[in-house]
Length: 501
Image 1 (cartoon, one colour):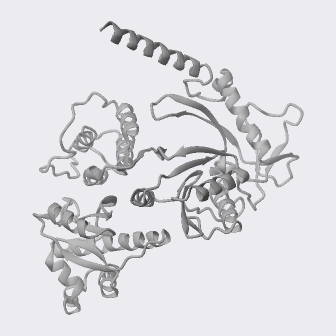
Image 2 (spheres, helix red, strand yellow):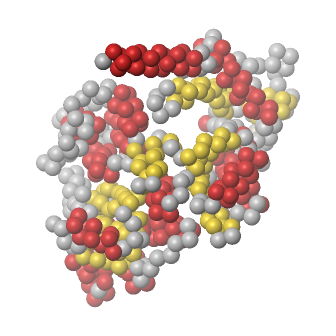
Image 3 (cartoon, helix red, strand yellow):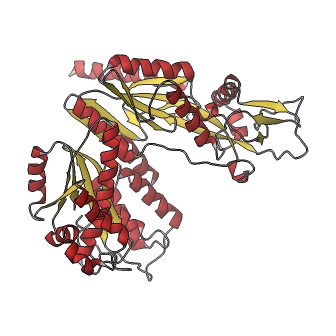
């Protein structure tokens, strides 16, 4: 007993020492404004670090303003970076341009830039687990400052750091600045140019001597991996030579997802994010519930109910929607509550709180417009990598039509996954799509039934086309034996499989 007490005291002392040692180098608060930040040396250092990045990357030049110059304002954004344990690990001061002042055609042209989808990230995690290699992670420091811009853009001097001698001058940008509308596209173009110049065939994968290096990019966060350690090291070294990088080792924390890669498989969860949103909405001490929504819950507009704060309600919905990235069991309940964001009532807020405490194509399930809900999930081997629960765009006249539209949506997702996996070097023939409605399968397979589906939007009939092409195989599954039959098919099929639920 005494030994236990001594051990606890010793560990507590060590933890306290580590905390105070760490807190001496970072501030625990986020400043209200620039003057508040300038009062703390840790935040002053963070702002100086940002401006030094600008100098190293040759982002701008201080020039005399031209007569037709329209300088864009700048502002400081302060954010504490936290680790998995919630401890502040870094004070980040970001100087951003006030891009809302920009005018299309004058200050910028194209703005679109690609990023990896969450589904593709989960698919890569499943692929890496099946091949037995671990994914690595790197982060580009001040990524947008590496992108060249073609437009002539001027910005005002940073608040709190104006030049005493040249207070009337402005900065002419050579490279993109955070906040500019074209900044993501400029960074993407720079990165793509580098990979193509070095012999890379795509932003997704690289083949070299029979090995395949998989790379996925979400703005400045890059995950990559391969069974060949030499190829992985070569890629990391090349990126470090070109950009200022943080090589973070094995992938563990990415876009709010906590990832544990082990020999028995890969586990993905959002425990920290869940704790954060429970704290944000003051529900950390709420009594847990066994289901996200009762089966007899029937939400409607409830126009006579008491109105609630729309901003807070939408914040709760948005937070839960991101939580569905790892929790498909709340997908239907969250999407149902999301229908009422325009005018939320007490009953809607109560339903959302039930989800915090803690589906079959539903014909005419919405009590307002009688539209059906499509529920689908897609698996790679035995790994669930994609799922969906959303209200259909049109009113169905029968359960068969609701299932048919849901199957078409599921088919489109399967085709996207099939194309993505082909980039990974995998090829598939017919992909099983499990449907518990024989009439839906008959409509998709038999052109003689076309007269009964003339009123269905033509875009949903591509399901029949891809069945005839051999891309998918519609397989009947008994609704009552859904889980058992799915497991049996999974044991015989090690590729893609989809289930209409």
